[in-house]
Image (cartoon, rainbow, N blue to C red; front, side, top):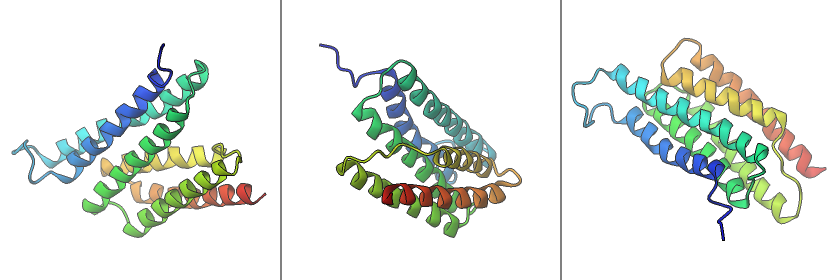
Length: 180
C-alpha cells in the first residue's frame, strides 16, 4: 500500500523545514563560521539563495498539491509549519544582524502565533479556516521584505512596515471570519 503522505508537496515542505535552520546559520554565524576568511556579503548571498529556494518550494508544494490532488492532512500541517519556520529563521537572523525592527518582528510573529492558535480552535469546531487572499498577499510581501533585508537592499525597512500592516489586516480578517 502506497503512503499518500509521501508525496512531492510534503517532501518539498519537509525540505523547506530543513532549509530554515541552514539559512539562519548563514545569517548569524558570520564570525564563527567554518568558512573563515569569507567576506560577510557571501553569507548574505548564501542565506538569500537558500531563502529564495525555500520560498519557491512554498509556491510549488501548494500548486502541486492542488493540481495533482495530493492534499493531505500531513501537508496541511507541514506547509504552514515550514512557512512559519522560514519566516521565524529569517526574522531572528535579521534581528541579530540589526537589519529589522524588533517591534515589527514582534507584531508579525505575535499575529502568526495567535492566528495559528485560532485556526486550531476553528478546526476543532469544524469550521473552515482556508487562507484568505489578504493572507496570501501578506505572505508574499513578508517574503519579499525578508529577502530585501537579508540582502541589505534599499527599501527593506519600508517593505517590512508594509508587511506589518498587511499582517495585522489579514489577522483581522481571520478573526472577523471566525466570529461570523
